[in-house]
Length: 387
Length: 135
Image (cartoon, rainbow over all chains, first blue to last red; front, side, top):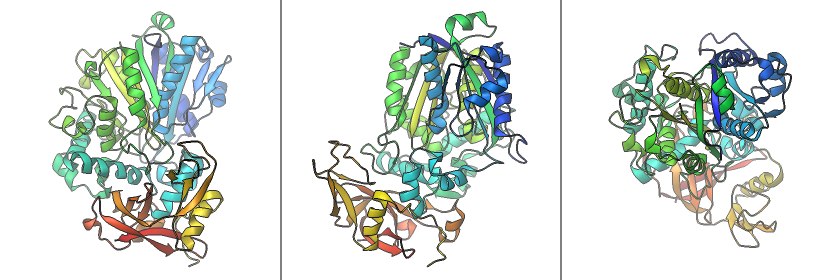
Protein backbone atom coordinates (compact mmCIF):
# COMPACT_ATOMS: atom_id res chain seq x y z
CA UNK A 1 0.00 0.00 0.00
CA UNK A 2 1.21 3.48 -0.87
CA UNK A 3 -1.13 5.44 1.36
CA UNK A 4 0.60 8.29 3.19
CA UNK A 5 4.09 6.86 2.55
CA UNK A 6 5.25 9.74 0.34
CA UNK A 7 4.81 13.48 -0.04
CA UNK A 8 5.11 16.27 -2.58
CA UNK A 9 7.72 18.64 -1.17
CA UNK A 10 8.57 21.08 -3.93
CA UNK A 11 6.73 22.82 -6.74
CA UNK A 12 8.03 25.15 -9.44
CA UNK A 13 6.63 27.01 -12.43
CA UNK A 14 8.02 29.35 -15.06
CA UNK A 15 4.85 31.29 -15.67
CA UNK A 16 3.01 30.95 -18.96
CA UNK A 17 2.76 32.97 -22.15
CA UNK A 18 1.63 32.99 -25.74
CA UNK A 19 2.82 35.71 -28.13
CA UNK A 20 5.73 36.21 -28.69
CA UNK A 21 6.66 32.96 -26.96
CA UNK A 22 8.95 32.03 -24.10
CA UNK A 23 12.16 32.81 -25.99
CA UNK A 24 13.66 29.73 -24.38
CA UNK A 25 14.27 26.16 -25.44
CA UNK A 26 11.93 23.57 -23.96
CA UNK A 27 14.90 22.19 -22.05
CA UNK A 28 15.74 25.55 -20.47
CA UNK A 29 12.07 26.14 -19.59
CA UNK A 30 11.88 22.83 -17.78
CA UNK A 31 15.20 23.41 -16.03
CA UNK A 32 13.92 26.75 -14.73
CA UNK A 33 10.83 25.05 -13.32
CA UNK A 34 12.98 22.26 -11.87
CA UNK A 35 15.33 24.68 -10.11
CA UNK A 36 12.31 26.54 -8.73
CA UNK A 37 10.96 23.22 -7.38
CA UNK A 38 14.33 22.40 -5.80
CA UNK A 39 14.43 25.82 -4.12
CA UNK A 40 10.84 25.47 -2.95
CA UNK A 41 11.69 22.10 -1.40
CA UNK A 42 15.01 23.20 0.05
CA UNK A 43 16.86 20.48 -1.84
CA UNK A 44 20.01 20.49 -3.95
CA UNK A 45 20.26 18.90 -7.37
CA UNK A 46 22.72 16.36 -5.98
CA UNK A 47 19.95 14.97 -3.78
CA UNK A 48 17.69 14.14 -6.75
CA UNK A 49 18.23 10.45 -7.52
CA UNK A 50 15.10 9.85 -9.60
CA UNK A 51 13.80 11.70 -12.66
CA UNK A 52 10.63 10.98 -14.63
CA UNK A 53 10.75 13.12 -17.78
CA UNK A 54 7.65 13.99 -19.81
CA UNK A 55 7.28 12.09 -23.12
CA UNK A 56 8.88 13.78 -26.15
CA UNK A 57 10.05 16.95 -24.40
CA UNK A 58 12.86 15.88 -22.08
CA UNK A 59 15.42 13.24 -21.21
CA UNK A 60 16.44 12.33 -17.68
CA UNK A 61 20.12 12.34 -18.67
CA UNK A 62 19.96 16.01 -19.64
CA UNK A 63 18.15 17.01 -16.45
CA UNK A 64 20.67 15.11 -14.35
CA UNK A 65 23.67 16.63 -16.11
CA UNK A 66 22.32 20.18 -15.79
CA UNK A 67 21.09 19.92 -12.21
CA UNK A 68 24.05 18.00 -10.80
CA UNK A 69 22.19 14.78 -10.02
CA UNK A 70 25.33 12.72 -9.47
CA UNK A 71 23.50 9.73 -8.05
CA UNK A 72 20.71 9.15 -10.54
CA UNK A 73 19.43 5.60 -10.08
CA UNK A 74 15.79 5.75 -11.15
CA UNK A 75 14.72 7.18 -14.51
CA UNK A 76 11.75 6.51 -16.78
CA UNK A 77 9.26 8.19 -19.09
CA UNK A 78 5.61 7.19 -19.03
CA UNK A 79 4.00 7.53 -22.44
CA UNK A 80 0.54 8.72 -21.47
CA UNK A 81 0.52 12.30 -22.78
CA UNK A 82 -1.29 14.61 -20.37
CA UNK A 83 -1.87 11.70 -18.02
CA UNK A 84 1.90 11.23 -17.67
CA UNK A 85 2.60 13.68 -14.80
CA UNK A 86 0.22 11.93 -12.37
CA UNK A 87 1.16 8.47 -13.64
CA UNK A 88 4.73 9.59 -12.92
CA UNK A 89 3.69 10.78 -9.45
CA UNK A 90 2.35 7.28 -8.81
CA UNK A 91 5.55 5.70 -10.10
CA UNK A 92 7.62 8.09 -7.99
CA UNK A 93 5.60 7.15 -4.90
CA UNK A 94 6.21 3.45 -5.64
CA UNK A 95 9.93 4.09 -6.11
CA UNK A 96 10.30 6.11 -2.91
CA UNK A 97 8.16 3.72 -0.86
CA UNK A 98 10.27 0.75 -1.99
CA UNK A 99 13.62 2.50 -1.57
CA UNK A 100 14.42 2.67 -5.29
CA UNK A 101 14.87 6.45 -4.97
CA UNK A 102 14.81 9.12 -2.28
CA UNK A 103 13.93 12.31 -4.15
CA UNK A 104 12.18 12.10 -7.51
CA UNK A 105 11.89 15.10 -9.83
CA UNK A 106 8.97 15.24 -12.28
CA UNK A 107 9.35 18.07 -14.81
CA UNK A 108 7.35 18.98 -17.90
CA UNK A 109 7.02 21.93 -20.19
CA UNK A 110 6.94 23.04 -23.79
CA UNK A 111 6.60 25.82 -26.28
CA UNK A 112 3.07 24.73 -27.10
CA UNK A 113 2.32 28.14 -28.62
CA UNK A 114 5.53 29.35 -30.24
CA UNK A 115 6.94 25.92 -31.10
CA UNK A 116 5.39 23.09 -33.07
CA UNK A 117 1.65 22.96 -32.39
CA UNK A 118 -0.10 19.74 -31.47
CA UNK A 119 -2.01 19.96 -34.75
CA UNK A 120 1.36 19.71 -36.52
CA UNK A 121 3.10 17.06 -34.44
CA UNK A 122 0.21 14.59 -34.53
CA UNK A 123 0.07 14.76 -38.33
CA UNK A 124 3.81 14.69 -38.98
CA UNK A 125 5.10 12.24 -36.37
CA UNK A 126 3.37 8.86 -36.13
CA UNK A 127 5.19 8.23 -32.89
CA UNK A 128 4.16 11.46 -31.16
CA UNK A 129 1.43 9.49 -29.39
CA UNK A 130 0.75 5.79 -28.85
CA UNK A 131 -1.96 5.01 -31.37
CA UNK A 132 -0.43 7.56 -33.70
CA UNK A 133 0.03 4.96 -36.42
CA UNK A 134 -3.65 3.98 -36.23
CA UNK A 135 -4.69 7.62 -36.41
CA UNK A 136 -2.35 8.01 -39.37
CA UNK A 137 -3.83 5.04 -41.25
CA UNK A 138 -7.52 5.36 -40.34
CA UNK A 139 -8.39 8.84 -38.93
CA UNK A 140 -6.21 11.37 -40.73
CA UNK A 141 -7.20 10.30 -44.28
CA UNK A 142 -10.83 10.98 -43.33
CA UNK A 143 -9.96 14.50 -42.15
CA UNK A 144 -9.94 13.77 -38.43
CA UNK A 145 -6.50 15.14 -37.70
CA UNK A 146 -6.51 16.60 -34.16
CA UNK A 147 -7.62 15.71 -30.62
CA UNK A 148 -10.75 17.92 -30.47
CA UNK A 149 -12.08 16.16 -33.58
CA UNK A 150 -11.34 12.70 -32.16
CA UNK A 151 -12.81 13.49 -28.75
CA UNK A 152 -15.86 15.18 -30.31
CA UNK A 153 -16.95 11.66 -31.29
CA UNK A 154 -17.12 10.75 -27.59
CA UNK A 155 -18.85 13.98 -26.63
CA UNK A 156 -21.53 13.56 -29.32
CA UNK A 157 -22.33 10.01 -28.23
CA UNK A 158 -22.60 11.13 -24.60
CA UNK A 159 -25.03 13.90 -25.59
CA UNK A 160 -27.12 11.29 -27.44
CA UNK A 161 -27.19 8.73 -24.64
CA UNK A 162 -27.53 11.03 -21.63
CA UNK A 163 -28.93 14.30 -22.91
CA UNK A 164 -25.77 16.27 -22.07
CA UNK A 165 -26.10 19.81 -23.48
CA UNK A 166 -23.99 22.56 -25.03
CA UNK A 167 -24.94 24.73 -22.05
CA UNK A 168 -23.42 22.15 -19.71
CA UNK A 169 -20.18 22.25 -21.71
CA UNK A 170 -20.46 26.02 -21.38
CA UNK A 171 -20.84 25.80 -17.61
CA UNK A 172 -17.38 24.17 -17.49
CA UNK A 173 -15.83 26.86 -19.70
CA UNK A 174 -17.43 29.67 -17.69
CA UNK A 175 -16.35 28.18 -14.34
CA UNK A 176 -12.71 27.85 -15.45
CA UNK A 177 -12.77 31.42 -16.75
CA UNK A 178 -14.21 32.75 -13.47
CA UNK A 179 -11.42 31.07 -11.53
CA UNK A 180 -8.81 32.54 -13.86
CA UNK A 181 -9.97 36.03 -12.84
CA UNK A 182 -8.57 35.25 -9.36
CA UNK A 183 -5.23 34.01 -10.72
CA UNK A 184 -2.91 36.80 -11.89
CA UNK A 185 -0.76 34.17 -13.63
CA UNK A 186 -3.65 32.91 -15.76
CA UNK A 187 -3.54 33.96 -19.39
CA UNK A 188 -7.28 34.63 -19.32
CA UNK A 189 -7.12 36.80 -16.20
CA UNK A 190 -8.88 40.01 -17.19
CA UNK A 191 -10.84 38.34 -19.99
CA UNK A 192 -14.23 37.28 -18.69
CA UNK A 193 -16.55 34.80 -20.41
CA UNK A 194 -20.34 34.74 -20.10
CA UNK A 195 -22.61 31.87 -21.15
CA UNK A 196 -23.93 34.10 -23.96
CA UNK A 197 -20.40 34.68 -25.23
CA UNK A 198 -19.68 30.97 -24.93
CA UNK A 199 -22.76 30.03 -26.97
CA UNK A 200 -21.78 32.57 -29.64
CA UNK A 201 -18.26 31.12 -29.90
CA UNK A 202 -17.64 29.59 -33.38
CA UNK A 203 -18.02 25.85 -33.83
CA UNK A 204 -14.74 24.02 -34.39
CA UNK A 205 -15.68 20.33 -34.42
CA UNK A 206 -19.32 19.93 -33.44
CA UNK A 207 -20.12 19.74 -30.53
CA UNK A 208 -16.89 21.56 -29.65
CA UNK A 209 -16.74 25.32 -30.03
CA UNK A 210 -13.54 27.34 -29.84
CA UNK A 211 -14.31 28.04 -26.18
CA UNK A 212 -14.52 24.32 -25.39
CA UNK A 213 -10.83 24.01 -26.21
CA UNK A 214 -7.79 24.49 -24.00
CA UNK A 215 -5.21 27.19 -24.58
CA UNK A 216 -1.94 26.57 -26.43
CA UNK A 217 0.85 28.15 -24.41
CA UNK A 218 4.55 28.15 -23.55
CA UNK A 219 5.74 27.30 -20.05
CA UNK A 220 6.92 24.60 -17.69
CA UNK A 221 6.31 23.23 -14.21
CA UNK A 222 7.89 20.61 -11.96
CA UNK A 223 7.40 18.90 -8.63
CA UNK A 224 9.36 16.63 -6.31
CA UNK A 225 8.26 13.49 -4.43
CA UNK A 226 10.04 12.15 -1.35
CA UNK A 227 9.35 10.09 1.76
CA UNK A 228 7.13 11.27 4.60
CA UNK A 229 10.11 11.22 6.99
CA UNK A 230 12.26 13.35 4.68
CA UNK A 231 9.35 15.70 3.97
CA UNK A 232 8.90 16.40 7.66
CA UNK A 233 12.56 17.49 7.89
CA UNK A 234 12.18 19.97 5.04
CA UNK A 235 10.69 23.39 5.57
CA UNK A 236 7.36 23.32 3.75
CA UNK A 237 4.00 21.83 4.73
CA UNK A 238 4.24 18.22 3.50
CA UNK A 239 1.48 17.29 1.07
CA UNK A 240 0.69 13.60 1.55
CA UNK A 241 -0.05 11.24 -1.35
CA UNK A 242 -3.03 9.29 0.01
CA UNK A 243 -3.76 7.45 -3.20
CA UNK A 244 -2.53 7.35 -6.78
CA UNK A 245 -3.32 5.22 -9.80
CA UNK A 246 -3.23 5.18 -13.59
CA UNK A 247 -5.12 3.25 -16.22
CA UNK A 248 -5.91 2.94 -19.90
CA UNK A 249 -9.12 2.61 -21.86
CA UNK A 250 -9.54 -0.56 -23.94
CA UNK A 251 -8.23 -0.53 -26.53
CA UNK A 252 -6.02 2.46 -25.65
CA UNK A 253 -4.66 2.96 -29.17
CA UNK A 254 -8.02 3.20 -31.02
CA UNK A 255 -11.08 5.21 -30.06
CA UNK A 256 -13.88 4.07 -32.34
CA UNK A 257 -14.11 0.33 -31.54
CA UNK A 258 -14.35 0.43 -27.75
CA UNK A 259 -17.08 -1.89 -26.47
CA UNK A 260 -17.63 0.58 -23.63
CA UNK A 261 -17.46 3.83 -25.58
CA UNK A 262 -17.38 6.04 -22.46
CA UNK A 263 -14.62 4.16 -20.68
CA UNK A 264 -11.39 6.05 -20.01
CA UNK A 265 -8.25 5.17 -18.11
CA UNK A 266 -9.81 6.84 -15.10
CA UNK A 267 -12.58 4.22 -15.09
CA UNK A 268 -9.92 1.74 -13.99
CA UNK A 269 -7.67 4.08 -12.02
CA UNK A 270 -10.12 6.01 -9.84
CA UNK A 271 -11.57 3.10 -7.82
CA UNK A 272 -8.03 1.93 -7.04
CA UNK A 273 -6.95 5.39 -5.91
CA UNK A 274 -9.99 6.00 -3.69
CA UNK A 275 -9.73 2.51 -2.17
CA UNK A 276 -6.08 3.16 -1.41
CA UNK A 277 -6.84 6.53 0.14
CA UNK A 278 -9.77 5.16 2.13
CA UNK A 279 -12.01 8.07 1.20
CA UNK A 280 -15.04 8.66 -1.02
CA UNK A 281 -15.05 11.18 -3.87
CA UNK A 282 -17.49 13.30 -1.84
CA UNK A 283 -14.78 13.77 0.82
CA UNK A 284 -12.70 15.93 -1.54
CA UNK A 285 -12.65 19.68 -0.87
CA UNK A 286 -11.69 20.46 -4.47
CA UNK A 287 -10.64 18.72 -7.68
CA UNK A 288 -8.21 19.70 -10.42
CA UNK A 289 -9.53 17.86 -13.49
CA UNK A 290 -7.49 17.74 -16.72
CA UNK A 291 -9.51 20.05 -18.96
CA UNK A 292 -8.17 19.67 -22.48
CA UNK A 293 -11.79 20.20 -23.58
CA UNK A 294 -14.93 20.93 -21.60
CA UNK A 295 -16.62 17.58 -22.12
CA UNK A 296 -13.55 15.73 -20.86
CA UNK A 297 -14.15 17.41 -17.49
CA UNK A 298 -17.73 16.10 -17.44
CA UNK A 299 -16.55 12.66 -18.53
CA UNK A 300 -13.81 12.48 -15.89
CA UNK A 301 -16.14 13.68 -13.11
CA UNK A 302 -18.29 10.66 -13.97
CA UNK A 303 -15.52 8.10 -14.41
CA UNK A 304 -13.77 9.28 -11.22
CA UNK A 305 -16.99 8.59 -9.34
CA UNK A 306 -17.99 12.12 -8.29
CA UNK A 307 -21.36 11.24 -9.84
CA UNK A 308 -22.85 8.37 -11.83
CA UNK A 309 -22.22 8.06 -15.57
CA UNK A 310 -24.66 10.34 -17.37
CA UNK A 311 -25.01 12.74 -14.43
CA UNK A 312 -21.90 14.78 -15.20
CA UNK A 313 -23.84 17.37 -17.17
CA UNK A 314 -26.20 18.33 -14.34
CA UNK A 315 -23.23 18.08 -11.91
CA UNK A 316 -21.42 21.04 -13.50
CA UNK A 317 -24.49 23.31 -13.56
CA UNK A 318 -25.55 26.05 -11.14
CA UNK A 319 -22.06 26.90 -9.94
CA UNK A 320 -21.50 23.47 -8.40
CA UNK A 321 -17.90 23.32 -9.71
CA UNK A 322 -17.12 26.98 -9.03
CA UNK A 323 -15.40 28.35 -5.92
CA UNK A 324 -18.12 28.35 -3.29
CA UNK A 325 -19.84 25.35 -4.90
CA UNK A 326 -19.84 21.77 -3.65
CA UNK A 327 -16.74 20.78 -5.60
CA UNK A 328 -14.60 23.65 -6.90
CA UNK A 329 -12.79 22.41 -10.02
CA UNK A 330 -9.62 23.89 -11.51
CA UNK A 331 -9.28 26.76 -9.07
CA UNK A 332 -6.36 28.13 -11.14
CA UNK A 333 -8.36 28.27 -14.36
CA UNK A 334 -7.09 24.99 -15.79
CA UNK A 335 -5.87 24.32 -19.30
CA UNK A 336 -8.91 26.22 -20.56
CA UNK A 337 -8.12 29.55 -18.89
CA UNK A 338 -4.75 29.46 -17.11
CA UNK A 339 -2.37 27.72 -19.54
CA UNK A 340 -1.58 24.35 -21.10
CA UNK A 341 0.91 23.14 -18.56
CA UNK A 342 0.70 19.50 -19.73
CA UNK A 343 -1.27 18.76 -16.57
CA UNK A 344 1.51 19.75 -14.19
CA UNK A 345 -0.28 23.01 -13.37
CA UNK A 346 -3.14 21.00 -11.87
CA UNK A 347 -0.73 19.29 -9.46
CA UNK A 348 1.02 22.56 -8.58
CA UNK A 349 -2.34 24.21 -7.90
CA UNK A 350 -3.48 21.33 -5.68
CA UNK A 351 -0.31 21.70 -3.61
CA UNK A 352 -0.82 25.48 -3.31
CA UNK A 353 -4.42 24.95 -2.17
CA UNK A 354 -3.45 22.32 0.42
CA UNK A 355 -0.65 24.52 1.74
CA UNK A 356 -3.15 27.36 2.12
CA UNK A 357 -1.29 29.43 -0.49
CA UNK A 358 -4.31 29.84 -2.80
CA UNK A 359 -4.60 33.58 -2.22
CA UNK A 360 -7.86 35.05 -3.47
CA UNK A 361 -8.88 31.70 -4.87
CA UNK A 362 -8.15 29.67 -1.72
CA UNK A 363 -10.70 26.93 -1.01
CA UNK A 364 -11.59 27.48 2.65
CA UNK A 365 -10.21 24.82 4.98
CA UNK A 366 -9.00 22.66 2.07
CA UNK A 367 -7.68 19.38 3.47
CA UNK A 368 -8.16 16.84 0.67
CA UNK A 369 -7.83 17.41 -3.06
CA UNK A 370 -8.20 15.15 -6.10
CA UNK A 371 -6.15 15.68 -9.27
CA UNK A 372 -6.65 13.88 -12.60
CA UNK A 373 -4.74 13.58 -15.84
CA UNK A 374 -5.95 12.71 -19.35
CA UNK A 375 -3.78 11.87 -22.31
CA UNK A 376 -3.62 10.44 -25.81
CA UNK A 377 -6.90 8.58 -26.59
CA UNK A 378 -8.22 8.71 -23.02
CA UNK A 379 -5.41 7.42 -20.80
CA UNK A 380 -6.14 8.38 -17.21
CA UNK A 381 -4.33 9.07 -13.97
CA UNK A 382 -5.36 10.32 -10.56
CA UNK A 383 -3.87 11.35 -7.24
CA UNK A 384 -5.59 11.99 -3.94
CA UNK A 385 -3.63 14.45 -1.85
CA UNK A 386 -4.00 15.83 1.67
CA UNK A 387 -2.16 18.26 3.90
CA UNK B 1 -5.04 12.76 -59.14
CA UNK B 2 -1.30 13.27 -58.59
CA UNK B 3 -2.05 16.60 -56.89
CA UNK B 4 -3.81 14.96 -53.96
CA UNK B 5 -2.21 16.61 -50.92
CA UNK B 6 -4.21 15.15 -48.01
CA UNK B 7 -2.93 12.58 -45.52
CA UNK B 8 -2.81 9.05 -46.90
CA UNK B 9 -2.63 5.79 -44.96
CA UNK B 10 0.72 4.06 -44.62
CA UNK B 11 0.35 1.43 -47.32
CA UNK B 12 2.07 -1.50 -45.70
CA UNK B 13 1.25 -4.68 -43.82
CA UNK B 14 -2.35 -5.34 -42.87
CA UNK B 15 -3.27 -1.72 -43.57
CA UNK B 16 -2.29 -2.17 -47.20
CA UNK B 17 -4.40 -5.32 -47.39
CA UNK B 18 -7.42 -3.45 -45.96
CA UNK B 19 -7.06 -0.57 -48.41
CA UNK B 20 -6.33 -2.89 -51.34
CA UNK B 21 -9.80 -4.38 -50.82
CA UNK B 22 -11.21 -0.83 -50.78
CA UNK B 23 -9.49 -0.23 -54.11
CA UNK B 24 -11.48 -3.15 -55.47
CA UNK B 25 -14.58 -1.48 -53.95
CA UNK B 26 -15.02 -4.51 -51.78
CA UNK B 27 -14.96 -3.86 -48.03
CA UNK B 28 -13.40 -6.62 -45.93
CA UNK B 29 -12.80 -7.05 -42.21
CA UNK B 30 -10.65 -9.57 -40.40
CA UNK B 31 -12.49 -12.48 -38.79
CA UNK B 32 -10.84 -14.80 -36.27
CA UNK B 33 -10.78 -18.42 -37.44
CA UNK B 34 -10.70 -19.59 -33.83
CA UNK B 35 -13.73 -17.80 -32.35
CA UNK B 36 -15.31 -16.07 -35.39
CA UNK B 37 -14.94 -12.59 -33.85
CA UNK B 38 -14.68 -9.76 -36.38
CA UNK B 39 -12.12 -7.03 -35.75
CA UNK B 40 -11.16 -3.59 -37.03
CA UNK B 41 -8.65 -1.91 -37.19
CA UNK B 42 -6.55 -4.81 -38.50
CA UNK B 43 -4.45 -6.56 -35.87
CA UNK B 44 -2.13 -9.57 -35.77
CA UNK B 45 -3.92 -11.50 -33.04
CA UNK B 46 -7.52 -12.00 -31.92
CA UNK B 47 -7.94 -10.11 -28.64
CA UNK B 48 -10.74 -12.49 -27.58
CA UNK B 49 -8.95 -15.85 -27.97
CA UNK B 50 -5.36 -14.85 -28.94
CA UNK B 51 -5.51 -16.92 -32.12
CA UNK B 52 -3.17 -15.91 -34.94
CA UNK B 53 -5.49 -17.56 -37.47
CA UNK B 54 -7.86 -15.27 -39.30
CA UNK B 55 -9.27 -14.52 -42.72
CA UNK B 56 -10.50 -11.49 -44.60
CA UNK B 57 -14.30 -11.68 -44.86
CA UNK B 58 -16.46 -9.57 -47.17
CA UNK B 59 -18.58 -7.04 -45.28
CA UNK B 60 -22.25 -6.48 -46.10
CA UNK B 61 -21.25 -2.82 -46.31
CA UNK B 62 -24.21 -1.62 -44.29
CA UNK B 63 -24.50 -0.24 -40.80
CA UNK B 64 -25.86 2.58 -38.68
CA UNK B 65 -24.30 5.81 -37.50
CA UNK B 66 -22.91 5.36 -33.96
CA UNK B 67 -21.50 8.86 -33.49
CA UNK B 68 -20.28 11.75 -35.61
CA UNK B 69 -18.69 15.17 -35.62
CA UNK B 70 -18.88 18.04 -38.06
CA UNK B 71 -15.52 19.63 -38.77
CA UNK B 72 -16.44 23.29 -39.25
CA UNK B 73 -12.91 24.60 -39.12
CA UNK B 74 -10.12 22.34 -40.35
CA UNK B 75 -6.89 22.39 -38.36
CA UNK B 76 -4.97 20.70 -41.18
CA UNK B 77 -4.29 22.96 -44.17
CA UNK B 78 -5.21 20.29 -46.74
CA UNK B 79 -8.82 20.10 -45.50
CA UNK B 80 -9.57 23.83 -45.29
CA UNK B 81 -11.60 23.86 -48.51
CA UNK B 82 -13.60 20.77 -47.51
CA UNK B 83 -15.38 22.17 -44.47
CA UNK B 84 -17.94 21.57 -43.23
CA UNK B 85 -17.34 17.84 -43.46
CA UNK B 86 -18.93 15.09 -41.45
CA UNK B 87 -16.84 12.10 -40.43
CA UNK B 88 -19.11 9.43 -38.95
CA UNK B 89 -18.39 6.30 -36.94
CA UNK B 90 -20.58 3.52 -38.30
CA UNK B 91 -21.45 0.34 -36.47
CA UNK B 92 -21.34 -2.22 -39.27
CA UNK B 93 -23.58 -5.26 -39.46
CA UNK B 94 -20.56 -7.40 -38.55
CA UNK B 95 -20.25 -5.55 -35.22
CA UNK B 96 -17.06 -3.60 -35.91
CA UNK B 97 -17.07 0.18 -36.26
CA UNK B 98 -15.61 2.04 -39.24
CA UNK B 99 -14.80 5.76 -39.42
CA UNK B 100 -15.38 7.50 -42.75
CA UNK B 101 -16.83 10.66 -44.22
CA UNK B 102 -20.45 10.96 -45.35
CA UNK B 103 -20.67 11.84 -49.03
CA UNK B 104 -24.31 12.79 -49.40
CA UNK B 105 -25.72 14.00 -46.10
CA UNK B 106 -25.84 17.66 -45.08
CA UNK B 107 -24.37 17.86 -41.57
CA UNK B 108 -27.62 19.25 -40.16
CA UNK B 109 -29.38 16.02 -41.15
CA UNK B 110 -26.95 13.65 -39.42
CA UNK B 111 -28.52 11.43 -36.79
CA UNK B 112 -27.26 8.65 -34.60
CA UNK B 113 -28.90 5.42 -35.73
CA UNK B 114 -29.18 6.58 -39.36
CA UNK B 115 -28.75 3.60 -41.77
CA UNK B 116 -25.81 4.00 -44.15
CA UNK B 117 -24.01 1.95 -46.78
CA UNK B 118 -20.39 1.86 -47.86
CA UNK B 119 -19.12 3.97 -50.74
CA UNK B 120 -15.66 4.53 -52.17
CA UNK B 121 -13.55 7.39 -53.36
CA UNK B 122 -10.37 6.76 -55.34
CA UNK B 123 -8.18 9.62 -54.16
CA UNK B 124 -4.93 8.50 -55.80
CA UNK B 125 -3.97 5.75 -58.20
CA UNK B 126 -2.92 3.64 -55.24
CA UNK B 127 -5.40 4.58 -52.55
CA UNK B 128 -9.19 4.31 -52.44
CA UNK B 129 -10.77 5.53 -49.21
CA UNK B 130 -14.00 4.15 -47.79
CA UNK B 131 -16.88 6.64 -47.48
CA UNK B 132 -20.55 6.36 -46.55
CA UNK B 133 -23.86 7.24 -48.19
CA UNK B 134 -27.36 7.18 -46.79
CA UNK B 135 -28.87 3.72 -47.16
